Image (cartoon, rainbow, N blue to C red; front, side, top):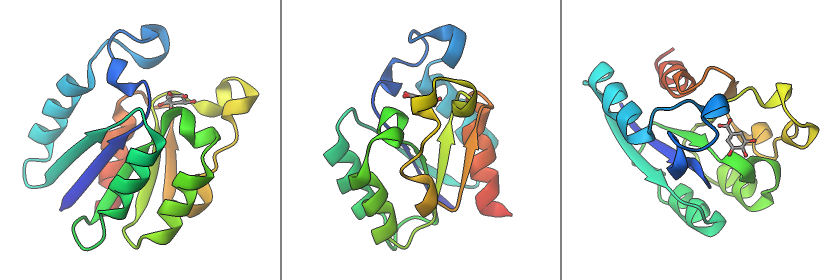
Length: 138
Ligand code: DQA
């Protein structure tokens, strides 16, 4: 399968950002493990701290990817633009979160993107990404 992982704002800081919530592994380290585990699949990766970049990357997925794994990070809770971009493409998108957003502050309980995603996975640490990848194979 051809899969794209998109990480939103501040996820470039994984490993050093609030390790009690997000763990101490960098995403580069995790991605290396994931690619080894799914060596028959092709996994592209894109990270941006900018909403418009994420919108544009989503626009470029049709007819290229079998699935997108999206951690929109803080934009999950604010972005109509990312929600509209997901609604406007035909590639299935799975929403992921490292932390369990429903156990945290109430502003994190609302996801603007969830209604347009195939499903949502939240709270399994970095393993959320592996579970999302498996969901495309089910
Ligand atoms: C997050 C949860 C969001 O609320 C937060 O803004 C993030 C990361 C997660 O992966 O747990 O940046 O998406």
